[in-house]
Length: 115
Image (cartoon, rainbow, N blue to C red; front, side):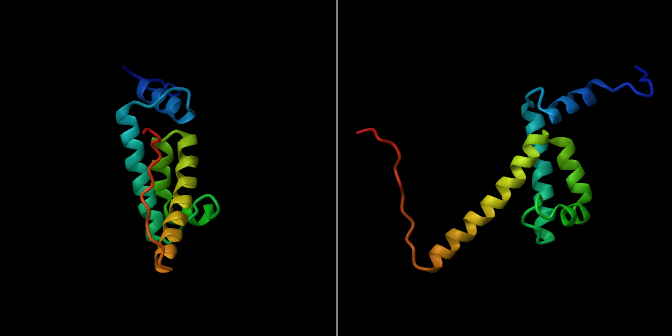
């Protein structure tokens, strides 16, 4: 099949629909997204960038290729969600480490109310 100058392949159309959030990603598309996310986050870690939304210019400069791959392989809403989740996760881990240093004891909490 020969594509015209402005025609998209079915795979390109599908990828655009996933990025836009108009179709749910398949298992393999989700896996591809997670791999791209992990690569992007590893680049941010190497460059000591915690908040890619707040420090967008630094993140784009340091991780341009990884960012492009992440945004290509994931739904736009997922990209924003993962970037926010990363900041919250880093803050949570830092707070837990701080509490442990102060002598806090980890408690196992059961939220199952069955008797």
